[in-house]
Length: 114
Image 1 (cartoon, rainbow, N blue to C red):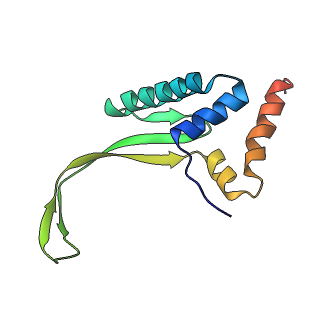
Image 2: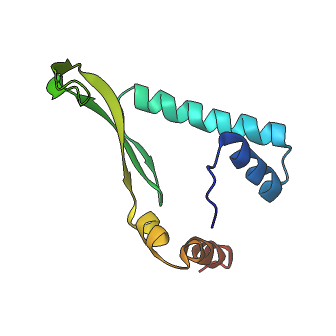
């Protein structure tokens, strides 16, 4: 089973196929979504995507470390990073053999008015 990375252009192509947009419009949509996500995270606010998970901006303090190739003690500078906590639904989907059906079942229930 070969693995491939889902790139932004592949994502745009999938959106184009599913929703009938042009690939160019789908790429603009994907870029716009990512730009808004970046805006939220750079403002140091958590970004919650319901039924997917939450991205948390984090600040890591400076700390001592060791250069593994030389054994020399170094100071790792303070930095900002992002953490992700998946939703319980995403965890179920990743761990289930038939994970994608969980989401599609819910969609069909919503479409039928249940």
